Image (cartoon, rainbow, N blue to C red):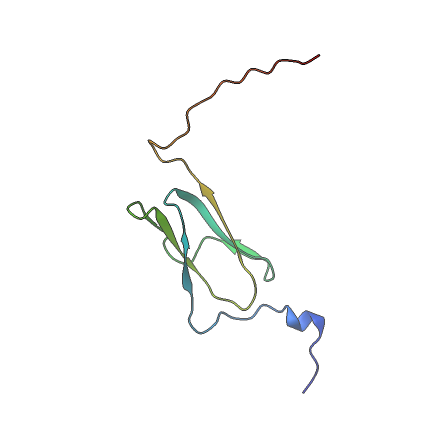
Length: 95
């Protein structure tokens, strides 16, 4: 049995047998979901549909299961009726 080099430990392996899972984001107002494989050096949209559920205010995102870390990036967008009101701020100098 040969010893593993440092490069072998970070080699991109195939997904685990379950093929994938679902990540639940605690908001339905999601846009631009992307998955970054920082070890494998790739990025792209999830492999299936992103499913927002406005009744439970969640979004289900299909994610691959790997033995290495992945990064999920998304933007949260305002939902009509829940936007913050615009504010005006005045700044006065103190001297």
